[in-house]
Image (tube, rainbow, N blue to C red; front, side, top):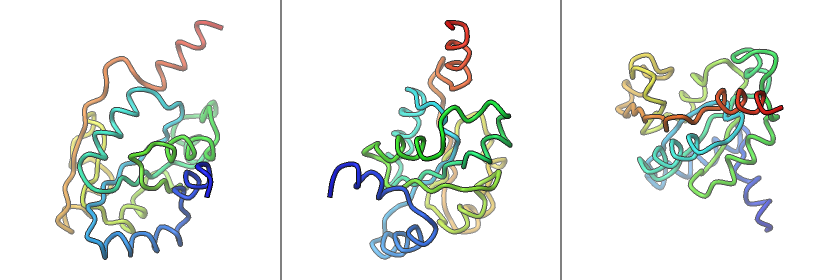
Length: 164
């Protein structure tokens, strides 16, 4: 199997996800889940995701589809299509799986995964994080991670526009 095939193999559809979850839960793996658009992958994303991965054995990323990014961020986004964004995330060694979701929030995906750790940026209050009720009911942990100052997709887009 080529390296590219291994990376692509980490991008899971719902059936593949359920199969992997059964195996991982049988092996008592601690599952970490986070989600986002990850439109232009940058240092802030890498540090955030690496810290999230350190919380457990496996990191699953819920990735907004192109249509959900448009609804959340506006008509000029995403900059990169969902396949490109998924491939970039899956290429990170500490990422176990990437799962696309169509809805505006990953609530149903969180319900399916039932992770041990639900992670978001520290700009969220834990009780305001989508899936908080699921995690608390099932004995999991809500974790927030500080952003890396000066690194955001919006800042990068503005910087690019100024230099055109």
